[in-house]
Every structure is written in structure tokens, then in C-alpha cells.
Amino acid sequence: MRPSPRTLAILGAAAIGSAVAPGLASGASWQFAPAVAPPTPAGAQPAPYGVPLGAVGQISFWSPNRGLLITKGNNVVPMGLYAYDGVSWHQLSTVCGGTDGRIAWAGPDEFWTISDQRPGQVTASTASLADISLCHFKDGQVVGSYAMPLQEADSYLPMDAAVCRNASDCWFGGSKVSSGGGFHLHWDGASVSVVISSQNHGIGDMANVGGTLFESADLQTADPNEDRYSPPALHTIVTGASDPFPSVLPGPDFGAAPDGTPVDPTTQTPLALSSDGGQLWAVAGARPLASPSGGLAPAGPLVLRYAGGVWSKVVPQSGALQPGDQPTAVAADPNSASAWIALDAGDDSAPLVHMAADGSVDQRVDLGPDQGIGPSGTAGPVACPAVNDCWAATSQGLLFHYTDGTALPQDTDPNFAGVIAYRPSDSGVPIVLPDSSPLDDSLANQANQPAPVVPTPPPPKKKKPKVIKAKPLLTKVKTKLLHRTTLAMTFTLTSKANFQLLALRKSKVVAQTKHVVLPKGRHTVTLKLNAKRWPTKFKVRVTVYKPKKKATTKAKAKSPSTSSGTSTIS
Image 1 (tube, rainbow, N blue to C red):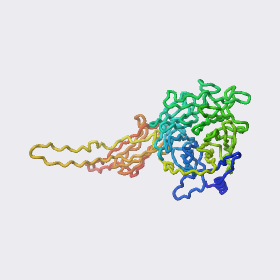
Image 2: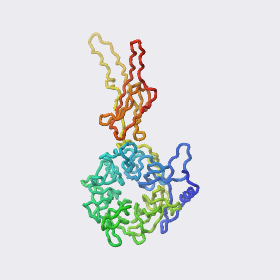
Image 3: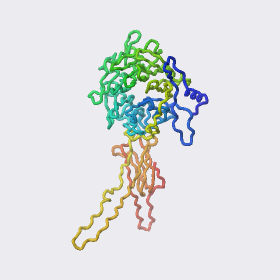
Image 4: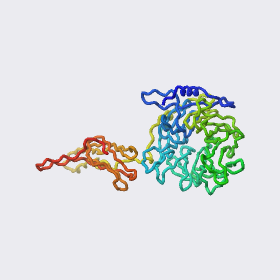
């Protein structure tokens, strides 16, 4: 949909400048900075304005002029990734996006994403594909994709957190497993394996503080082995230890209601984490629609800071937060004991506050209204790669840049020039292969042995016979699912042949095509499948067509049954 002239005028004015937040001594301000529209189709005119990207799961930077964000996309922007080169955000990948995706850097040209699983598997009931697979990017391409079939005992669970200590040690955390414990995946440099933590909690977020890895716990389900009023909300991650996820003790002080009633920790959202390498900030708010258990009060804003090896609670000073403000995301402000905190104020004002370690707030800005473009949704992820250099996104996918106008050198690394459109296969969608093999030619390369040599007369030299390799009858096989329950197989026959495709479930035929004769050439065969009797394998019966001999009687011989010339079988 083409924006109205008024909308274009607002976007243009916002791109030129924005209102400066009060109390700003550095001269930096939050400005509207939309991403560059995706490449247009051939022959179309490129859009002259930036576009909203849809819900952004995370914004993350390797350096101030090398950043990434992962998006769910919308009806204009496909699900995928965008890259920042110091000048603008541009499309990097149309694969491996996520509904609420995450990013973990493993090196300057290597990173991982928590992504949605690709569609294709047919299941008995609707199953979510959101945030249950991994993609490994390296040197400008996706070098690995990791997923498992849905609704199985070993299926991956939704993941909300990702972090790498180095290229051979990356962790991903997610929901609580049904038997108890937090679901994790671990990359050890060679393979991805499942690890379950002993604490009865899912995982909310992860961060790397100078090589020490932290993760936050989702306290929605109480663990009977923990303090009811102050359970550990954080763990460290110790790769290779017998217990890789020791709790950070003592647990935080979750506060109390004005009448002194202790807060129920199960009503607190998991802590969102952010580190600049030397300090770590953690923020949480009240869990929506959560009711405290008897005798306890509902949760409110919680802000923690880790510095010098010590955790401390940051208590917001009077008036620092407005009634109803609930923290949703945080970005540590580099080289200062402060952080930018994104808030949910219960409306579309998308507020951010700049809070110091003493709980004071010197800046508050509403992303959208303060830049003259109106409400833009709720404040989402925020990241600060350098001093006076931060980025934030709203729930509508609008981007805002905190800057003092300092220009950055453009990153010209070709690995971030985009657009990546290929994702390798994985176990998430079964690959259907024909159950037949080419003709056996294993002896075709064995030449006849020469006759034995006798003294007299010398035998004439024999020429080695020319070896002719038999052509496979069935070649160039490709398969895919159409409309979730129809298998389409495309292949080439090198000779006229008898053909039939069968679907089997535990050796029993559950679907099959008609037995037909197909001419030499390229064909596509379709087979309707039953979701309740989903096959475990497929079998192809294909043999060289041999016409029947003509009858020797005077009666007219019947011609052999052949196909009508069409190459599609239903």
C-alpha cells in the first residue's frame, strides 16, 4: 500500500531531525531512522522511503558500524535479517528470520540465530514453528541449519535466549520441559546437542560479561527446592561442568507492596539482560494477567546491576518511573554506570528512560511522538554499541537512533552486503527420496583378461573391449509437498518405462499411483496422502518397458497399454 502524501511528509521530516530530549548535555538525541526498503522486483521503481520491519526480536552489534536485527517481517518485508553498515540498515537475509528471534555473535563474520522452523511437515494438529530452530551464519552464507520434526519426544522447544563465549561454545535456552528443567541447545564447535538444566524453570535471556555467561530464569513455575520469596533468578553457564547452570545466590530482593506484603516471584517476567563487556544490567516487569498466590503481592519493576563481580539492586528514585511503567528491555550504556530501559506504559507511547546506578533518571523519551511521527507501538529491543550511539525498535518495526551526529565509516565487508536466500536442509522437514536404485553396473568397468602368453607362437595382441556404462533409468529426482498433503515427484526417464509410486507405513501400502507406461523424458507425478496414515517411506517401481509380442493367431493383436501422453498422475 502506497503511503499518503501526509505520511511521506512526516517520514521525511522525521528523517531530517527530531526533538531533543530534555536534560541532554551531550547533544545526542533519539531520531527516527527507518530501514532501507527491500530490493524491488525487476522493472519496479524503488521505494523512496524507509519501511517498518514488523516485530523485531533483537538488535545486536559486533561494532558500531556492524549490526544485525532479526525480524518477523510483515506484508511488505519478508521474515529474515537486516544488517547495519554504519550508514543504513539493509536487507541481509530472506531466510532464518524469527517470530521473536535472537542473535549470538561468534566472531566478526560468524553468528547464530534462533529462527522459525521452515514449513513443510504435515502434523495431525496445528503446531507452532516459532523460534524452534537454529541457523549458523559464516562468511556471508548459512552454513548450518538445525531443527527436529514436530510433536516428537526429541522435538526442540521454543527458545528465547542465545549467547556465544567463542566460535566453539554457544548456548541457546528456551522453555521448561514437561518433566522439569530448562531446555538448552549447545554448540561445541562440531555439533549441536540438547542439555537440560536441573532447575525447574525455563530460560528468559542470556549475556556474556567478559567471558562469564549468565542466563535468567523464568520463575513462572515455582521450584519447591528454592526459597519461595527469593528464588534465584539468574544462573551462570559453566561449559563442561557436571552442573553447567549453577544458581546465582542469594536470589534478588523482589520487593514488597506498600503495606509490606512480599512480592510473589512467579508474577515477575524473566529478567532481560544487557552487557557492555564490563557491566551487566537486568530488568523485569509484572507478568501480564498473572495473579499472586495467597498472601503475596503482584510483582512490579525490578532493576539489577552487576559490576566488579557484585550484584546490586537498583531502586528507582521517586518520580523516575511513572505509575504502570513496566521494564521490557535494557541496553547497558558503554563506559558509564547507566543504561537505557525500554518500558511498557500500557499504551503506544513506546517510552525509554536513561537510568543511572543510583536509580535516578535524567532522560525520558517517547519513541514516535517525540520525533513527530505519532504512536509507534510499544518499545522493543534496544542496543548501545558505543557512547552516544544506541538503537531501538518498536513493536511496529520502526527504528530509532540515538546519536550526536558523529559519522561512522561504512562497513564494506562483502559478507554483510546481502541478500542471503539459501538455508541448508535439516531434520525439521523429512526429505523424500525414491526407494529404487540405478541399474547395477558394478561389473561394467571390468575388462576381459588377455589370453595367457605361450612361448611359441606369440599370441596376437587383443584389444581391450570398449566399456559402455549403462544409463540409470530414473534420474534427476526432486520431491516436495503441495498443499500439505500432496507429494509431487519430478524426475527424468532415460527410456520408456513402467512406473508406479507407492507410499508405505510400516511396510503397508497406504497410498499409490496407477501403474502406467511413461515415455522417455521429464515427468511429474503427484500422490494424495492421508495425514492420519502418514507414510514412513516411499517406494518407486520402475522397469524398462518391453512391448508384448504380436499374437501369432489370425485374430488382431491387442496393443500394449501405454500412457495417454500426460506426465502428471493423480
